[in-house]
Length: 422
Image (cartoon, rainbow, N blue to C red; front, side):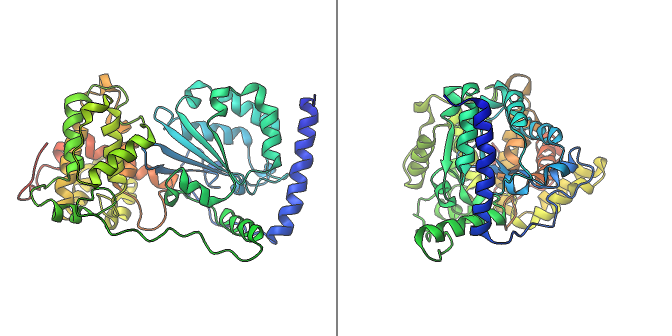
């Protein structure tokens, strides 16, 4: 029986061996020079600026995507690991009440930047049931023997239930089977390492992973097509059917459900319902007996729009909301919303009227404007290129919270023809 001390020594030897192998495979390292977080007022700026942890919105099934990138860890003498642990908790505290998943990019963990095994034990103990309960999956990308040895060290501490959440991912392409790959913020070092691994596996250069070209949408398509497409194919529907049907059901059954919009649903069930909608077949949420199903469907619909409901042009304007004086923010949000194309404005007003209604029941459902903004912000707006970074989430959430809390003021004046209210 190998003792814990022997395993720890073996782990140290293994990571040094892997370092030597990586140097042969990777050649000279290119380290990013720019910081991820430029907001010096951030309470954890000293840690956040490295980009070790990123929140990239929801996956296709309503679960928050949180990324930990080892290659962004600076040398240990340049980082206070206690502060890193506090920053991890600070970040997760914003999301642990809803379902979330973690993607851990292992590449780049070296002897000079790795936290101690003692720190890892402390971290695992700090993350009590509150953090583990709603963690639905932990993906370890590019695992090595070091990871497996550490896992054996921790096995006595780890419950069987938690252990089942772990999935090893050898190549980035495999992540497509589990989550929305395009929402990931993948460090360039990790992308290059994956290319080298696949090239070495095949014995030659390997082409970049590409998504196959999309099939032409069906005339009845609802998910993954533009608002304009849906409007053209549903002449009588000002509000997309998925939005109107989910909102109608949730108004009747979900307003007083605690944690509404915070939970995910069974992945295959969501896929089946999406298929029904896309084929133009009727969907009855009554048969599922779970208000979280239409809640996830609503978020999924918004997230799969080719252009966000708030549109790409307003992204930079929303990012600037943090520079607007607090007393003027409602007025600024109103100006931004009124600049939207007419159809986007109509659909947004319909949706926000409903979310405002949900927030009025927050004493019971625990979904305040701030909590709803945390859930819906990244489903209403994202940049034209790349994913939403953790730093960019703050202004998006502030903006969304104002739209919900001050709905009557923000949407009071503009009332385009044909508008439909919930």
